[in-house]
Amino acid sequence: MKQAIKIAAGVGLTAALCAALPAWAQSATLQAPPAAPAAVVNKGDTAWMMTSTVLVLMMILPGLALFYGGLTRSKNMLSTMTQIGAVACLAMLVWVMWGYSMAFGPDVSNTFLSQFVGSLDKAFLKGVTSTTQAATFTAGVEIPEYVFVCFQMTFAAITIALVLGSVVERMKFSAVMVFALVWLTIVYFPIAHMVWASSGVFFKAGALDFAGGTVVHINAGVSALVAAIMLGKRLGYPREPMPPHSLTLTGVGTGLLWVGWFGFNAGSALEANGTAGLAMINTFVATAAGALAWMLIERARGHKGSALGFCSGIIAGLVAVTPAAGNSGPFGAIVLGAVASVVCFFAVSVIKPKLGYDDALDAFGVHGVGGMVGAIGTAIVYAPALGGPGAADYAIGAKLLVQIEAVVVTIVWASIGTVIAILIAKAVTGLRVSQEVEYEGLDLGEHGERAYN
Image 1: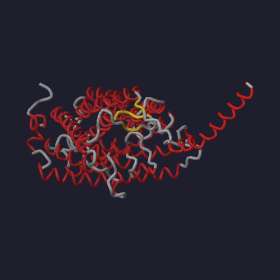
Image 2: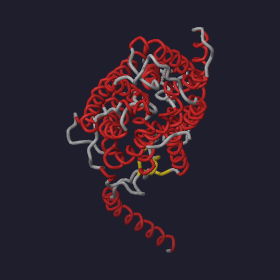
Image 3: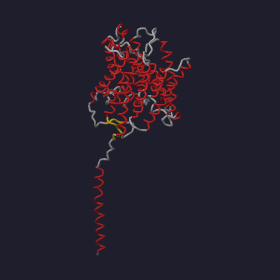
Image 4: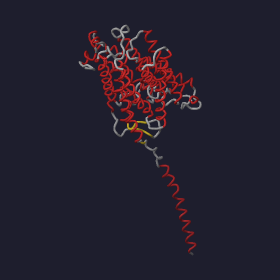
């Protein structure tokens, strides 16, 4: 009897389970699929990016200010440093007002236009809070958006400061500020969007610019050349000698630039990972190669290896490796730094005197030319056969074409935009200081101070 009861109970339970199956199946079909895991903010990445941001700020103040200031005559030392600091501050304010939105904000409604500039939907950092996040290059790993905003803000600040290297010792402070405001808006923000924003024309084309070969250095260098030509030569150039007044300060600035450049290059990985480590070692070795190559070419040309050449070679190596920092193996970076240094040497010592333009601190000769060598050379050193991180089927020719296109568009865009910005600054301020102020020095004439008493 007990056995019969057990069998009956089992049959009943089985029937009940079978009857419930359709209901379970229906319930299962009504349930939503599991949501994808939310992107995580990594505290280590965040700490590294905050550190990198501060390092880039150190590149500007005091790095670039001392580097450029030491290269000028003593009567213009404070003027040079003040111009660099002031335009950097202006860039920071403009960046949070409309620059970040134009460079990295949501796409505009026009699909074609969205390839060249972002919308103003994030103007004044609308919608950006301490809880919003920015993507990195690893799916599911993000950093706080405020940190990303600050990091990219320092890139805008140093780029406009680099442009001033060609126009120091003769451009009004008021003109510098007007020029910077216009130039950032119509030149820097659109080019940053084209190269680094996901909807940008060159980002979609696969252009390689790890940390700013086109966006920063070609952009600034070409703009510097155009501005110098439009502004005209310094009084007495090239008849009167105009040597740097303090190579000691230039050397200090060079060291600060090199240290800060690790934030610039390794920070562009947006994470504290192996790519950042690759960018780090490349920033070491390409720079070292550039410094020694410049001194060697000086000796080969019958001159002594100079401290100025050492500093110039360091900057040339840094500029060249910027687009390739995470896109090259260490030995490719060494070659790239050395080649760029030699090319930049001829640009400033042979080509500039022959053409006669007054690029006072060689912003074009080092940043513009070095940026072009680096941007185009990145397509070569990216190849896995040369130690680069490219895929096994990587085609140098196709990528080389993309890189050249990006370089050409940057040159044209920066040239046209700089002409517009200079003309506006001239209309508003008169552009250039008087002859009396230029002879006296801009420190006293524009700021009422002396660098040395």
